[in-house]
Length: 508
Ligand SMILES: [Fe+2]
Image (tube, rainbow, N blue to C red):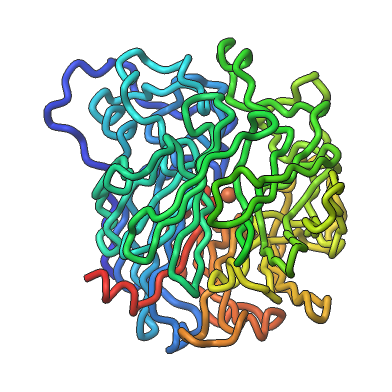
């Protein structure tokens, strides 16, 4: 075993750093597994419990926020740490681990200054004047692979390119060779496995708090081939979207951009319970002028499990809650945060575009199971799909008001949803573990939908360690087929992505 723990690199030209020592003490946001890790690691041949299946060959990447320095504003939120990418390279039963911070523009500026220079979450009013011309992007939300490029993403800025093998940052502001018209780029692009295209969008695309959304397509060679502009009914979080073979759909939730709050030093968003939720549906490949907005009641939904168009009927499955699911984004009218109303369940939204007078969308809760961060077999992003996966709460454990939110509740299961039979099967990580998002790995390139493994991070609460867990989707209840054991904990993760060995070989 070869374990190298080293601090991230320091700029030798650095001068004039403040004399204040670096300390994360007394910051309640950094408790236990939420605490920054701050080390970059190369660990060849991790300890493995069980057997990594011989058909698993590729790399699992995951990214999350990890504070480089104590926050400039002590009331900042955990989501505003710098992007920290970890890679598990799995091949021939071996697992090699590598992790690196994404060298964003802000990371490099802060490294030189030896302190945080950017203020509150997505609030440029609170930044140090010296960083006014730099990108605020942390690249801490998702990491995906397309056209031979590994992209670390944050929805308020363009992608940051990384080398898929070394995790070296290659481009801290990738604008697709000048063709990206939006100033922002979603953390949830979709991939059309028939055409090889990536479909993406950017909101607040013409600058902070603008109501402009750019939608675009990047072909399999990485060239922007289509773009359109739309306007949203009000400016708010547009975290994910749905793409089918025919349509593109956006859900605008009452997580409204609040400039007044920003000017007072707060975060970018506040939950405005007086606002409706809007579902907008437009034709794929058009000019965007055909978008129709359908109105619904106050709801919170951030991630799409899958979506399909059947003629003019569009169906989108999301994890949906009654109210604000983000305890660190305040309610605009001072209402207390409601844990129960924040519980998310897979909900099917439907619209029928053939009904010209329709002005609302249908909602049906598909399963009673509470969870967060749904995924699917990523080869089926734009296709009719059958299987979904989601981290879920231990159903045997009663709801505990003291544990607050689903983000901090014991999410220690991964559940597979079979929409064809309306059945579920569940992997349980144990009462002393929590699970992060899971990512699907096909058993082979041409394996049937959902046939393979789900992988992701388990945090071992008693041991203060993290593992990579590999679960066979056909045998969820039987437990992990392999566990890659890390001799340390890694920080919070948000989303992850699988890249096959074949793709990595092609990337050189
Ligand atoms: Fe997300």
